[in-house]
Length: 277
Ligand SMILES: Nc1nc2c(ncn2[C@@H]2O[C@H](COP(=O)(O)OP(=O)(O)OP(=O)(O)O)[C@@H](O)[C@H]2O)c(=O)[nH]1
Ligand SMILES: [Mg+2]
Image (tube, rainbow, N blue to C red; front, side, top):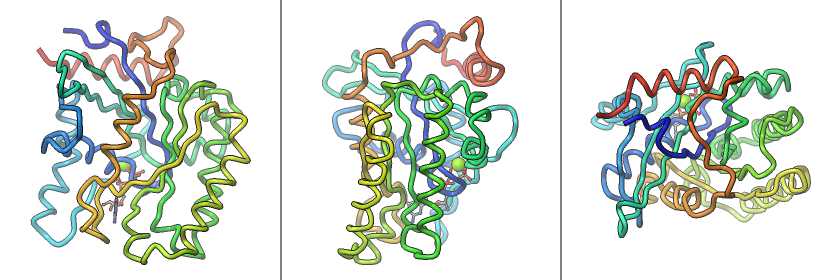
């Protein structure tokens, strides 16, 4: 069955600098499905199982040692890697949704941040129905790092909007990743005030330019506050992606005739290699 030709797919771009937690967020969704821990939905397949498994492999080995870890996503000019996930409603398994997630190295977003032309080259951004911009809570707790981290995130989003690659009805979520760092630090009033201030700043800067802007928090692998449970917040996030999708954002995977050199061709090649029987 040619997935690419048979059903619409929702494209979710996970954006953020190196080490922000992009890959871990994706693997946590996959693992929670394996453990049946996503409320209301079940895993209904993936055309990129090896890619998910490869990313989970290291953390599984490491989980027998003191600290789990995610392999770094390497930057190469082969374009982004894509992870496919098909989910079904638990009560109506024939109701399915296909997601295609980008697993892009943070270095690619450094190029995006530095140049609107680099943005225009990234065709996957044009297809995004959801754009998830990660803010690293670990850095947010470092007063010497937090403002640079916030500025970098704003610049990535600004660059994507200025270059007009993000569609007007793309849902943009500004997401505090590694939220367990805040929890470990006691989630003090001043930290809550800081997060509120950042949400206000993003709203003031981008609220008019983005039709759906929202905020959230996640702790995909909460090693600093294990009581939160693995994948804290990821189930809710996925639920939001499933239940709220502006109508035009479910798009076919078929390459457009004028498709640019990387994302479409890469996706189709990738799917042809990894299709399930
Ligand atoms: N404490 C904690 N650490 C996390 C969490 N999520 C990810 N990490 C760690 O943060 C580091 C970076 O995570 P990645 O998922 O590789 O980050 P990335 O954004 O994919 O990074 P690049 O691929 O290099 O751009 C790894 O050591 C993860 O184990 C979290 O929720 N809590
Ligand atoms: Mg990565």
